[in-house]
Length: 309
Image 1 (tube, one colour):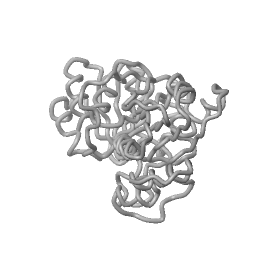
Image 2: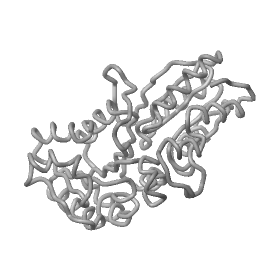
Image 3: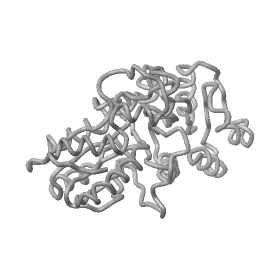
Protein backbone atom coordinates (compact mmCIF):
# COMPACT_ATOMS: atom_id res chain seq x y z
CA UNK A 1 0.00 0.00 0.00
CA UNK A 2 1.54 3.27 -1.17
CA UNK A 3 0.55 5.24 1.93
CA UNK A 4 2.01 2.95 4.59
CA UNK A 5 5.17 2.26 2.56
CA UNK A 6 5.80 5.98 2.26
CA UNK A 7 4.96 6.66 5.90
CA UNK A 8 7.34 3.91 7.00
CA UNK A 9 10.13 5.27 4.82
CA UNK A 10 9.74 8.83 6.10
CA UNK A 11 9.34 7.76 9.74
CA UNK A 12 12.92 6.44 9.62
CA UNK A 13 14.07 10.02 9.16
CA UNK A 14 11.45 11.99 11.04
CA UNK A 15 11.02 10.93 14.67
CA UNK A 16 7.95 13.14 15.05
CA UNK A 17 5.86 10.70 12.99
CA UNK A 18 3.49 8.54 15.06
CA UNK A 19 0.62 6.27 14.01
CA UNK A 20 -2.57 5.79 16.04
CA UNK A 21 -5.25 3.30 14.99
CA UNK A 22 -8.65 2.22 16.21
CA UNK A 23 -8.20 -1.56 16.27
CA UNK A 24 -8.35 -1.85 12.48
CA UNK A 25 -5.98 -2.21 9.57
CA UNK A 26 -3.46 -4.58 11.11
CA UNK A 27 -2.56 -6.22 7.83
CA UNK A 28 -1.57 -2.78 6.58
CA UNK A 29 -0.02 -1.13 9.63
CA UNK A 30 1.89 -4.15 11.00
CA UNK A 31 5.20 -3.14 9.34
CA UNK A 32 5.05 0.25 11.07
CA UNK A 33 4.08 -1.26 14.43
CA UNK A 34 6.94 -3.77 14.29
CA UNK A 35 9.60 -1.25 13.32
CA UNK A 36 8.41 1.58 15.57
CA UNK A 37 6.59 -0.01 18.53
CA UNK A 38 7.18 3.11 20.65
CA UNK A 39 5.55 5.28 17.98
CA UNK A 40 2.49 3.10 17.35
CA UNK A 41 -0.69 3.06 19.48
CA UNK A 42 -3.79 0.91 19.11
CA UNK A 43 -6.44 2.66 21.19
CA UNK A 44 -9.04 -0.07 20.65
CA UNK A 45 -12.51 0.52 19.25
CA UNK A 46 -12.58 4.12 20.48
CA UNK A 47 -12.14 6.46 17.54
CA UNK A 48 -13.16 9.60 19.42
CA UNK A 49 -10.48 8.87 22.01
CA UNK A 50 -8.05 8.10 19.19
CA UNK A 51 -8.63 11.57 17.80
CA UNK A 52 -8.24 13.40 21.10
CA UNK A 53 -5.11 11.39 21.99
CA UNK A 54 -3.63 12.28 18.60
CA UNK A 55 -4.39 15.96 19.16
CA UNK A 56 -2.71 15.91 22.56
CA UNK A 57 0.37 14.20 21.15
CA UNK A 58 0.53 16.73 18.32
CA UNK A 59 0.37 19.61 20.78
CA UNK A 60 3.46 18.06 22.42
CA UNK A 61 5.40 18.37 19.16
CA UNK A 62 4.63 15.10 17.41
CA UNK A 63 3.17 14.56 13.94
CA UNK A 64 0.35 12.05 14.34
CA UNK A 65 -1.51 10.00 11.74
CA UNK A 66 -4.85 8.48 12.71
CA UNK A 67 -5.99 5.61 10.52
CA UNK A 68 -9.16 3.62 10.03
CA UNK A 69 -11.91 2.70 7.58
CA UNK A 70 -13.91 5.40 5.80
CA UNK A 71 -16.36 6.95 8.23
CA UNK A 72 -14.73 5.83 11.48
CA UNK A 73 -11.84 8.34 11.77
CA UNK A 74 -13.98 11.13 10.27
CA UNK A 75 -17.73 11.30 10.84
CA UNK A 76 -17.66 9.35 14.11
CA UNK A 77 -15.09 11.79 15.53
CA UNK A 78 -16.41 15.04 14.13
CA UNK A 79 -16.57 16.95 17.42
CA UNK A 80 -13.05 15.88 18.43
CA UNK A 81 -11.69 16.74 14.98
CA UNK A 82 -13.31 20.17 15.10
CA UNK A 83 -12.53 21.16 18.68
CA UNK A 84 -9.33 19.27 19.48
CA UNK A 85 -7.53 19.22 16.12
CA UNK A 86 -8.77 22.08 13.95
CA UNK A 87 -9.38 24.67 16.65
CA UNK A 88 -5.82 24.16 17.93
CA UNK A 89 -4.28 23.74 14.46
CA UNK A 90 -2.82 20.48 15.71
CA UNK A 91 -0.45 18.60 13.43
CA UNK A 92 -2.73 15.57 12.94
CA UNK A 93 -3.28 13.83 9.62
CA UNK A 94 -6.56 11.90 9.50
CA UNK A 95 -6.32 8.97 7.10
CA UNK A 96 -9.34 7.03 5.94
CA UNK A 97 -9.11 3.99 3.71
CA UNK A 98 -12.01 2.84 1.59
CA UNK A 99 -13.45 6.10 0.26
CA UNK A 100 -16.79 5.92 -1.55
CA UNK A 101 -18.12 2.41 -2.11
CA UNK A 102 -14.82 0.58 -1.53
CA UNK A 103 -16.45 -1.29 1.38
CA UNK A 104 -19.73 -1.51 -0.48
CA UNK A 105 -20.53 -5.06 0.59
CA UNK A 106 -20.67 -3.98 4.26
CA UNK A 107 -23.65 -1.68 3.74
CA UNK A 108 -24.40 2.01 4.18
CA UNK A 109 -22.58 2.28 7.52
CA UNK A 110 -19.33 1.61 5.62
CA UNK A 111 -20.11 3.72 2.53
CA UNK A 112 -17.91 6.81 2.86
CA UNK A 113 -19.98 9.15 0.75
CA UNK A 114 -20.23 12.38 2.78
CA UNK A 115 -16.76 12.59 4.32
CA UNK A 116 -15.30 15.13 1.89
CA UNK A 117 -18.21 17.52 2.42
CA UNK A 118 -17.88 17.35 6.19
CA UNK A 119 -14.09 17.66 6.27
CA UNK A 120 -13.91 20.56 3.82
CA UNK A 121 -16.33 22.54 5.99
CA UNK A 122 -13.90 22.55 8.92
CA UNK A 123 -11.62 25.58 9.34
CA UNK A 124 -7.87 24.82 9.05
CA UNK A 125 -8.52 21.42 7.42
CA UNK A 126 -6.74 20.45 4.17
CA UNK A 127 -8.61 17.77 2.19
CA UNK A 128 -6.75 15.45 -0.18
CA UNK A 129 -8.03 12.45 -2.18
CA UNK A 130 -5.28 11.00 -4.40
CA UNK A 131 -6.27 9.56 -7.76
CA UNK A 132 -3.97 6.52 -7.82
CA UNK A 133 -1.11 4.93 -5.84
CA UNK A 134 1.41 7.31 -7.38
CA UNK A 135 -0.56 10.30 -6.13
CA UNK A 136 -1.10 8.60 -2.74
CA UNK A 137 2.65 8.34 -2.27
CA UNK A 138 3.16 11.97 -3.27
CA UNK A 139 0.29 13.14 -1.06
CA UNK A 140 1.75 11.41 1.99
CA UNK A 141 5.07 13.16 1.44
CA UNK A 142 3.40 16.51 0.83
CA UNK A 143 1.29 16.33 3.97
CA UNK A 144 4.29 15.41 6.11
CA UNK A 145 6.05 18.49 4.79
CA UNK A 146 3.10 20.66 5.79
CA UNK A 147 2.16 21.48 9.38
CA UNK A 148 -1.44 21.51 10.55
CA UNK A 149 -4.60 19.41 10.19
CA UNK A 150 -5.21 17.40 7.05
CA UNK A 151 -7.55 14.71 5.79
CA UNK A 152 -6.19 12.04 3.44
CA UNK A 153 -8.89 9.97 1.74
CA UNK A 154 -7.57 6.75 0.21
CA UNK A 155 -9.06 3.95 -1.83
CA UNK A 156 -9.15 0.46 -0.42
CA UNK A 157 -5.97 -0.64 -2.27
CA UNK A 158 -5.65 -2.36 -5.56
CA UNK A 159 -6.49 0.72 -7.59
CA UNK A 160 -4.57 0.84 -10.89
CA UNK A 161 -1.71 3.21 -11.52
CA UNK A 162 -2.86 5.93 -13.90
CA UNK A 163 0.40 7.85 -13.93
CA UNK A 164 3.21 5.97 -15.64
CA UNK A 165 5.84 8.62 -14.92
CA UNK A 166 6.60 10.86 -11.91
CA UNK A 167 4.07 13.65 -11.39
CA UNK A 168 4.37 17.25 -10.27
CA UNK A 169 2.28 16.88 -7.13
CA UNK A 170 1.59 19.99 -5.07
CA UNK A 171 -1.12 20.50 -2.48
CA UNK A 172 -3.80 22.71 -4.03
CA UNK A 173 -2.66 22.26 -7.65
CA UNK A 174 -4.53 19.95 -10.03
CA UNK A 175 -2.67 17.55 -12.30
CA UNK A 176 -3.59 17.76 -15.98
CA UNK A 177 -3.75 14.08 -16.96
CA UNK A 178 -5.02 14.64 -20.51
CA UNK A 179 -5.13 17.63 -22.81
CA UNK A 180 -8.36 18.62 -24.53
CA UNK A 181 -10.20 21.68 -25.78
CA UNK A 182 -13.82 20.49 -26.12
CA UNK A 183 -14.79 19.70 -22.55
CA UNK A 184 -13.18 19.13 -19.15
CA UNK A 185 -13.56 16.19 -16.80
CA UNK A 186 -12.59 17.11 -13.23
CA UNK A 187 -12.24 14.14 -10.93
CA UNK A 188 -10.99 13.31 -7.47
CA UNK A 189 -9.92 10.15 -5.69
CA UNK A 190 -10.16 6.67 -7.12
CA UNK A 191 -12.45 7.77 -9.96
CA UNK A 192 -9.42 9.02 -11.89
CA UNK A 193 -9.03 5.87 -13.97
CA UNK A 194 -12.74 6.00 -14.82
CA UNK A 195 -12.31 9.58 -16.06
CA UNK A 196 -9.35 8.56 -18.20
CA UNK A 197 -11.35 5.70 -19.73
CA UNK A 198 -14.30 8.04 -20.35
CA UNK A 199 -11.98 10.48 -22.10
CA UNK A 200 -10.71 7.65 -24.31
CA UNK A 201 -14.31 6.77 -25.25
CA UNK A 202 -15.06 10.39 -26.06
CA UNK A 203 -12.01 10.55 -28.31
CA UNK A 204 -13.51 7.76 -30.39
CA UNK A 205 -16.56 10.00 -30.75
CA UNK A 206 -14.42 12.93 -31.91
CA UNK A 207 -14.50 14.82 -28.59
CA UNK A 208 -11.23 15.96 -27.08
CA UNK A 209 -11.43 15.95 -23.29
CA UNK A 210 -9.21 17.62 -20.74
CA UNK A 211 -8.85 15.48 -17.61
CA UNK A 212 -7.92 17.14 -14.33
CA UNK A 213 -7.01 15.07 -11.29
CA UNK A 214 -8.21 17.35 -8.51
CA UNK A 215 -6.47 15.46 -5.74
CA UNK A 216 -6.81 18.43 -3.39
CA UNK A 217 -10.40 19.52 -2.79
CA UNK A 218 -9.38 22.09 -0.20
CA UNK A 219 -7.63 24.33 -1.03
CA UNK A 220 -9.06 23.94 -4.53
CA UNK A 221 -7.09 24.85 -7.65
CA UNK A 222 -9.21 27.83 -8.68
CA UNK A 223 -6.83 28.72 -11.51
CA UNK A 224 -7.29 25.33 -13.20
CA UNK A 225 -11.09 25.60 -12.99
CA UNK A 226 -11.17 29.13 -14.38
CA UNK A 227 -8.86 28.10 -17.23
CA UNK A 228 -11.10 25.12 -18.04
CA UNK A 229 -14.14 27.42 -18.14
CA UNK A 230 -12.36 29.76 -20.55
CA UNK A 231 -10.80 27.15 -22.80
CA UNK A 232 -13.44 24.40 -23.00
CA UNK A 233 -17.21 24.47 -23.49
CA UNK A 234 -18.34 22.17 -20.70
CA UNK A 235 -17.13 21.01 -17.28
CA UNK A 236 -18.19 17.75 -15.67
CA UNK A 237 -17.12 16.79 -12.16
CA UNK A 238 -16.80 13.11 -11.33
CA UNK A 239 -16.59 11.79 -7.78
CA UNK A 240 -17.49 8.73 -5.71
CA UNK A 241 -19.13 10.94 -3.11
CA UNK A 242 -22.40 12.77 -2.61
CA UNK A 243 -22.95 15.52 -5.14
CA UNK A 244 -23.71 17.73 -2.12
CA UNK A 245 -20.67 19.38 -0.60
CA UNK A 246 -17.94 17.47 -2.40
CA UNK A 247 -15.81 18.17 -5.45
CA UNK A 248 -18.75 19.21 -7.63
CA UNK A 249 -19.96 21.74 -5.08
CA UNK A 250 -16.46 23.16 -4.67
CA UNK A 251 -16.07 23.58 -8.44
CA UNK A 252 -19.54 25.14 -8.70
CA UNK A 253 -18.56 27.74 -6.11
CA UNK A 254 -15.52 28.69 -8.17
CA UNK A 255 -17.53 28.96 -11.37
CA UNK A 256 -20.22 31.07 -9.73
CA UNK A 257 -17.77 33.50 -8.14
CA UNK A 258 -14.98 33.73 -10.73
CA UNK A 259 -16.28 33.09 -14.23
CA UNK A 260 -18.25 35.48 -16.44
CA UNK A 261 -18.29 33.15 -19.44
CA UNK A 262 -21.17 30.68 -19.52
CA UNK A 263 -20.07 27.07 -19.54
CA UNK A 264 -22.16 23.92 -19.38
CA UNK A 265 -21.61 22.37 -15.94
CA UNK A 266 -22.84 19.18 -14.33
CA UNK A 267 -21.93 17.22 -11.21
CA UNK A 268 -21.67 13.45 -11.53
CA UNK A 269 -21.66 11.60 -8.23
CA UNK A 270 -23.96 9.97 -5.72
CA UNK A 271 -27.42 11.44 -5.25
CA UNK A 272 -28.64 12.73 -1.87
CA UNK A 273 -29.60 9.33 -0.52
CA UNK A 274 -28.18 6.29 1.22
CA UNK A 275 -27.60 3.34 -1.05
CA UNK A 276 -30.42 0.85 -0.46
CA UNK A 277 -28.11 -1.92 -1.67
CA UNK A 278 -24.90 -3.62 -0.60
CA UNK A 279 -22.49 -5.10 -3.10
CA UNK A 280 -19.16 -4.74 -4.78
CA UNK A 281 -17.71 -1.32 -5.51
CA UNK A 282 -18.19 -1.90 -9.23
CA UNK A 283 -21.85 -2.91 -8.72
CA UNK A 284 -22.63 0.16 -6.62
CA UNK A 285 -20.81 2.48 -9.02
CA UNK A 286 -22.89 1.03 -11.83
CA UNK A 287 -26.07 1.62 -9.82
CA UNK A 288 -25.14 5.32 -9.54
CA UNK A 289 -24.13 5.65 -13.21
CA UNK A 290 -20.48 6.05 -12.19
CA UNK A 291 -19.13 3.31 -14.45
CA UNK A 292 -17.53 4.30 -17.74
CA UNK A 293 -20.72 3.36 -19.57
CA UNK A 294 -22.90 5.25 -17.09
CA UNK A 295 -20.79 8.40 -17.27
CA UNK A 296 -20.77 8.37 -21.08
CA UNK A 297 -24.55 7.97 -21.10
CA UNK A 298 -24.95 10.95 -18.76
CA UNK A 299 -22.64 13.03 -20.93
CA UNK A 300 -24.65 12.01 -24.00
CA UNK A 301 -27.80 13.42 -22.43
CA UNK A 302 -26.11 16.60 -21.20
CA UNK A 303 -24.44 17.32 -24.52
CA UNK A 304 -27.47 16.32 -26.62
CA UNK A 305 -25.34 13.87 -28.58
CA UNK A 306 -25.44 10.13 -29.20
CA UNK A 307 -22.10 8.91 -27.87
CA UNK A 308 -20.88 5.35 -28.17
CA UNK A 309 -18.96 3.68 -25.37
